[in-house]
Length: 292
Length: 231
Image (cartoon, rainbow over all chains, first blue to last red):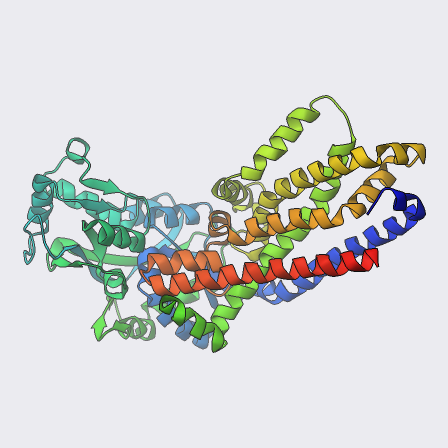
């Protein structure tokens, strides 16, 4: 628009048009808010802080619809590493935690953030590595010997490096193998600070060894040249536990709905749902709640 | 293109979960851009027309904040909205509203900075006339905003592009909850981490097509209204 038309255009007209645009935007916002309202108003829902392994393996996609069907409760899962999930709950941003690192969970309870911890299920960790097997560990059942061989051969190894349950389990295994990581760390040891799936992607791209939970490995699709090289050692046991966040610490915790989820997970029905989740005929998680 | 087939089949079959993800992405980013525009356009215009000490510093800051890292904004909003944070009582962390707030903060500097530049350029052209007509400050801002609306549309599109494409902020404040706060970008990140690269890539194609369609629509609107304004 040229300067000349400025004078033929009354100022009022511009004001009117601006006002119209403003109210147009505002009503647009209101319509959008209205479109979202049902989801915001949904109050029969809980937030569960859990691990990447339970989400990436597809377990939640299998059991949550069953729970919803029975109780009408929506479970919103935030998938993080175990350490981060516990921190989320410590800040009061979750109602229930469902993780796998016994020592961290006990500490969480001692600090008074959890009400009570229940065993839910277990699976196991597996050492995944390239089929060429540069460290020569394939077929072994001794995980610490395998870790030591990887370090001695300086074979590439991908570490989660994110304080997740799997990362803590890995650190414990290095210790049990007598490897002092601080001095042994070199270009062969690659900490990526990401979830299980990302670690597997990285290992596939670099033909590296990586410690994974079996569930995520079984459901993982981008395997490249990787395969399981060590499994079956009882030190690879991986226990999952569930806790309601303590309402005494965080009054906003939805006690009734959260407890309903905990109760269902350890009930015969919930346990059966967990056992029924299979990929290619392989069961991913083994329910072991006590008294079921 | 065969890699993207699975995602196209999903959208062609009207997969409810996928449509919900697309809808949420659009709702969140459009709301964020609208909020940022309602604040950023007047802010940019006032900054263009006023002179005060520290103005240059403010402009440099605003321009610099166009490059705010989404994860940092996400983290800041997360700490604000967390139950243990100052705004925790509202309980809006891990909801679409939290995602809109984070994206609006990301987009606000882009819209305000581009509007400031556009309007300052137009102000040079209009200054003498508006001064001669003795138009007040609000009238000046209104005149300049309205007469530069086509250029400002580009600023809004730049903001929208930033919002719909970012993953860092919505991942942190939304939590990527299935069926509730999962957007196109967080779904792509999730499928990548599950190793389902074909589906992730397919979702990526859909996102790019969506952004192209919206930009084409905005372009069409501009051409149409320019013709109307001149005709």
